[in-house]
Amino acid sequence: MSGPGTTPASSPRYVLTLETTCDETAAAVVIDVPEVISSVVASQDALHERFGGVVPEIASRAHVERILPVIDEALAKAEVSLEDLSAIAVAHTPGLAGSLLVGLVAAKSLALALDIPLIAVDHLQAHVYAGRLAARRDIYPCVGLVVSGGHTSLFRCDSPLDFVHLGSTIDDAAGEAFDKVASMLSLSYPGGPSIERAARNGDGSRYAFPRSFIDDETRLDFSFSGLKTAVRYQLVGPGHADFAELELDEQQVADLAASFQEAVVDCLVAKASLALKQAGLNTLCVGGGVAANGRLRERLADEAMQSGFELIFPPMSLCTDNAAMGAIAIERLGRGETASLELDVRPGLVREPTAPTGG
Image 1: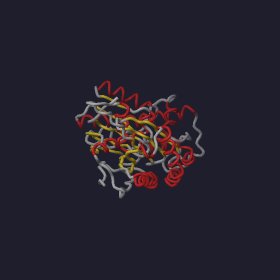
Image 2: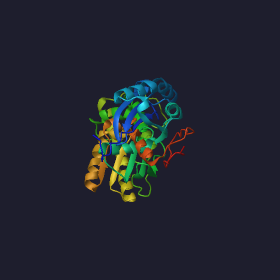
Image 3: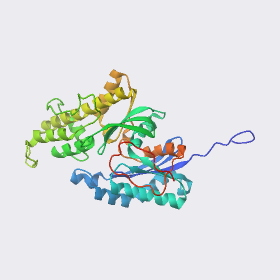
Image 4: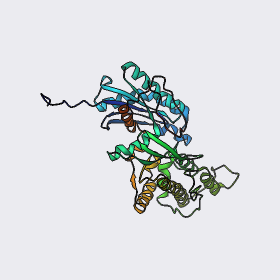
């Protein structure tokens, strides 16, 4: 209770955050603790399953259909109205152009109608910030490893908003390779979970698949295209692409899945450890959909114990794309870094996230 000589507790600032960078339509309401009050995600897995990967046109059309219902649900779960909001935040980079535009247009429209600030969110910074939400404390400076269907990147993260690019994949992202190999093995989409399930009964040492750059201590990049091709050659040989007549028994599939997964994990663990060494840091935060992989978590935990660094993983719900990690907008709001209504999308990988032009 406030009274003479006391200062009334300030009311929390509510921010609505939107995420439509790829194939998840998501909205969340966060407050400036930071704390997530509500989080809603509409998955498109069923729409893309028959294609074995995300089809950009289908993804953007689905966002158009789902964005308003998802926003309504997030507000209802948080028990707040549009008039309670202090700002609208939206992930505007990196991602699929059509998908990004749906979220950006929705965010701009709400910001303009409500006459409240618009805040730009970098999707990769947000994935690392999911670790900050999970830890419920400051985790910076740290090395951030973002590994998903569209990204496999390492950053030196001096603060939630100050990133320096250290390395990334030169071809396929790890999650994309999981999807493609799962398709070769006639496993379900998305490929990450199906490969992991199959690998549990497999021998990860049966097939000697390549691990690109793993012994090169001068670079922090990844490459998974050659690994994917090696799996293809193991199945059908060079110059052939027809998997229709393949007859693999359950153990062969398990061994192929386990050997492929082990090769990916070896590369991720090696380069993350090298990044910590080169950056002179002792905290690793891992984000992105592939961060949900149990074998990666196990191997990184072992490496952290042996090498003595701190390892931070978000919970499973904050690994795949979501708007809760858009709580990083609170950091921009605190700095007074708002975006103008001229804000545009930046598709693809931006190697060094930067603050948007203020408005």
